Amino acid sequence: MLLDLVLVAVGVALLAKAADEFVVGAARIAIAARLSPVLVGAVIVGFGTSAPEMLVSGIAAANEDAEIGVGNIVGSNVANLTLVLGAAALIVPVTILGTTLRREAPLMVAAVVLFGVLVQDGLDTTEGLFLLAALVVSLGLIVYWGRTNPESELTAEVEEFLDGEGTHPLPREALRTLLGLIGTVIGAQLLVEGAVGIADELGLSGGFVGFTLVAIGTSLPELVTAIAAARKGEVDLIVGNLLGSNIFNALAVGAVVGIIGAGPIDADRLVGVGVISMVVVAVVAWAIMAHRRRVHRWEGVLLLVGYVATVALIGPTG
Image (cartoon, rainbow, N blue to C red; front, side, top):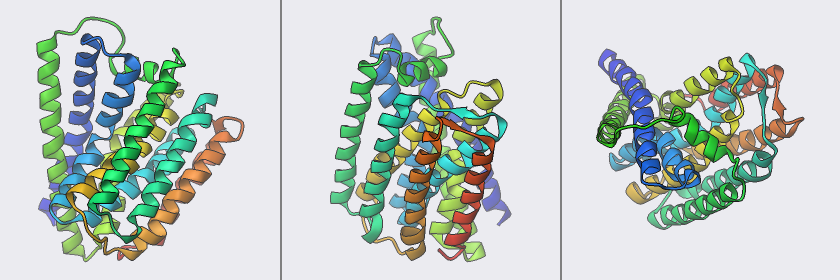
């Protein structure tokens, strides 16, 4: 049990650091290659920030623990819009851009609903490929929106990850990207091994462990970033990043689980109560954000209570 806890702690720490280094290095290389900041923001930054969820769920599915992989997707999506957004709103009210409410928010809800419908009988290869196709369409829309809006969130997001202007030697950034990717893979493997061990030791369901322990671990980078941004008063990108993360989790990570670990999901409460909660949270969060385009502190408390209630509804055997 102690070893499993150590594996989880080390895995989470590696994911938090290595994934960030991977994103920064890859984005700097892409910018040096003269790729559009919008494309970099949509593809590289988008994939990079969802790399922990993708690798953890992919490894779990490959190890025939798809229940943990699906629990990670559902739990991460719920945690992003309750735990992370709620914690940020407790520090300072989070403002929402109008374009985000009109574009990314409904796209996020659609992605979550699509994943929720397909996962009901388990994910097979065909459904994984369908989610992949939906991801391509979503990326196309995001890139198109970004190109029609030069001052888009994606451009600002890229600038944020690149730490402003300046030159960065390509060999160093290539090494940063490689080491970040390796660290993320190792961290994901350690987290999955530790989570499986804890589930077996305590008699918990894989879905519950994936929804809670694993999902919080893979969402920790978003939580740390959101809290840091809120403390600095830089809240414009918090919601855009969280919505984008949920889109990638539902479509990209869902596709990986379906293609790698095709088969039924033996976790009725996870695919029932958990998935319904994920959709409800997405819709409620959208409604809260649309209310005066700001998430106030009392609404942040409401979101945090919603997270605790969702965990309780699924239960340790879910």
